[in-house]
Length: 264
Ligand code: ADP
Ligand code: MG
Image (cartoon, rainbow, N blue to C red; front, side, top):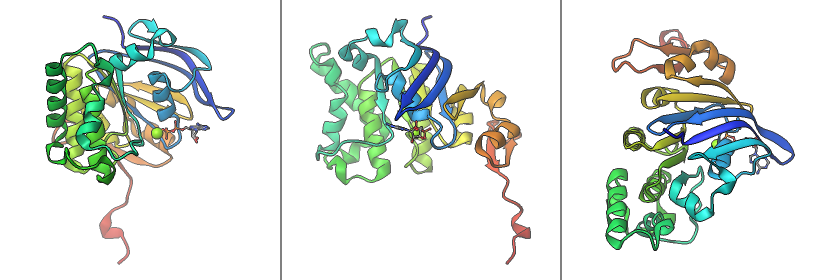
């Protein structure tokens, strides 16, 4: 099967600096790939290169077997959808209008019924039915994130790129967003998601890639990638990686010391 992405030797420069350096990465259909790593490591820049928004300095990105540069912007918008880190809607569109924007790339291609079905499914999956008539700009951070995710889902693309979709979300909605990511993968889509919560990544990603200073320093299954030594070397903080957990998913927590030794 064609890979969603084949990234070879990718280097991207911004502001005169190499922000992404010599990255090799494949993304498969049917998988959730988590990108993790410290603040400023280059995760968003790498994702931006994959969307076609950040210029490539050296190396190549193939999407669906074709060089990214060969894709027209219209075809690209039907192939991959992006949830950016900042939700950039500033004009006071209603939430419903924001979700409907996800159908723009399909105008002239999809029927009105297909548009309606896609929009209704996206609203249902992101739990925003009660927000539809509100102005997007008046939503909380977490509500904005879910409305933006609904727009991405309504776009119904093979490839879905999500930059910190869970950052502003409460516990339940974090879990729900990652279950949406899993269900997209189960439909055969490729999902790349930037996450900070290593335990959430371990539980819901098929593979994890760690980005450190522009390079991918490790990629593989959660158990392969998330060792205590690697977490410590990448994040500069000692961590416990717990393997014997109730649900069988790895849990990563920093060393915090015992509360009974804390001074009172
Ligand atoms: P992450 O998403 O991993 O936190 P980013 O990809 O956003 O990291 O940023 C990586 C580095 O690139 C940071 O040092 C950031 O300041 C820098 N950077 C990002 N965008 C630009 C830009 N447009 N011009 C110059 N430097 C940038
Ligand atoms: Mg980022």
